[in-house]
Length: 255
Image 1 (cartoon, rainbow, N blue to C red):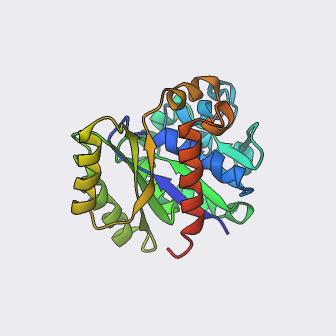
Image 2: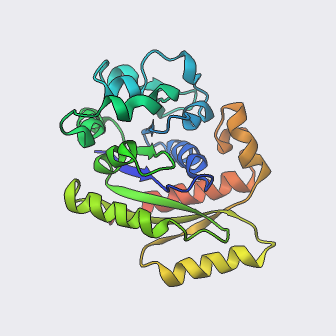
Image 3: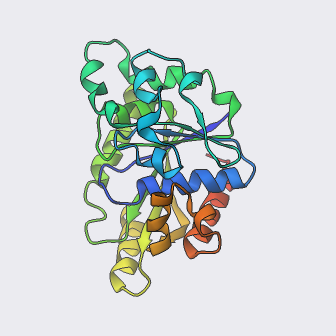
């Protein structure tokens, strides 16, 4: 049965999508069967894995509105062992269309229950807001992984995210736990990055992954080529970092 990890932070630009794409690809590289679910209407995870998001007949939007089955909206990628449930801008309207539907918080979970035995890992990229799509991701997930950018406002909004995770735990998904925090966009040349890491370690009572993702031009370039970093530049520091993160995730079976 798959381990389901939601990657969430309502702050945009923290490396959430980058982490979803590259963690998925590096888990697949370790011969794990991986499904990546894109719940962000921007569809950046979808295009970052080489899928033409605007040319797809069935996306997570059609699934949420019960217009297709989950198997009909899963797409193979060019990467071995890696499938995607794609998203595009249509998803932005889903929240309004779901008004009045009972148990709308569980739509994704109920669909994923049908296929979770087919995968080792299911990675869910959440939108950069705490909305119904994020709640659906958290009711589906076993754990939440939070990417934190190494910058001054890193902790801002984090308490709100943890509050949301706790609420989902209490009311919708009692089994949800915090997978931990991963630092992204780390710049070894600045004291600030180091201070942010220390500050989070001192203020957060949660697991902090040892792997720190560096700020990297190659990492930033890869999505525009529709490739994860381990395919775009296999020897780059970004590729090595996400391989290390994937190994850490695989080794954390005790959650």
